[in-house]
Length: 187
Image (tube, rainbow, N blue to C red; front, side, top):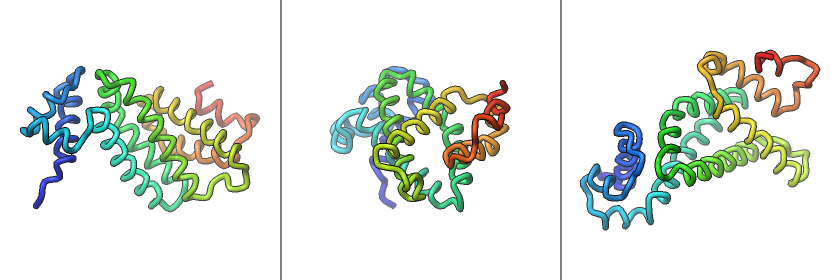
């Protein structure tokens, strides 16, 4: 069985960031961890941000495919939240590394791309103009990223209910007078 060198390098970087809690990730650390030469690293990746981007895009594609395979939007949201919550420790560790700013920008771009693809595949907001769809997506993406940033253990316990509520919000089924948002926010 052939070894996927890119995967090997990405796994080494992940191991260094997560298991060894390295804050200043270097190419030297990565090549030593996976026992390759610097030339082998640079053959596959331009630099560490390129490696991080490749890893995030690969994971994002897998998550997108799994979400689109779900029967409905609510199940896809539940899946997305479960994956995001389970990845949170890894993301936080990466954000505290010397590539934190770049990683945060990459994550925002990937989440935007992810939801744009979901919107397109699930035919969401088709009755709106292109400009309106962009604004609606920016709004929802910002809201979801905000939820994930402030995620609590209680949210994890109520994940299915949150996915249900988010799906209803996205579909315009909740009105502010209903009180549902206030109950979820604990107000």
